[in-house]
Length: 96
Image (cartoon, rainbow, N blue to C red; front, side, top):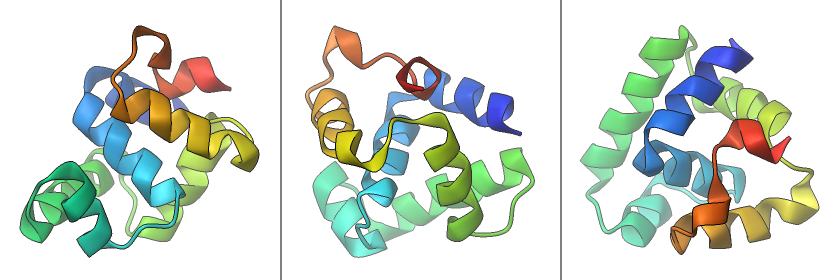
């Protein structure tokens, strides 16, 4: 399942950003604001991720994502790299 999440996130900068914001602890409304999307769009992305991974909720997604990325002290840096869309951001697989 970790491999499937890594592949899923490596294919989609939008999903990578969404998961990074989730890991920061933002709510659905805050994520929608940060991404300049509607709450419905954020929900659609999340439901799609859940379905593709065969998981049921945000907590399971966060546990999976945490197992792929850097320790918590680097989440802020990870978010900056993703939000600035820098070349060095790579995928969550690269952030282990």
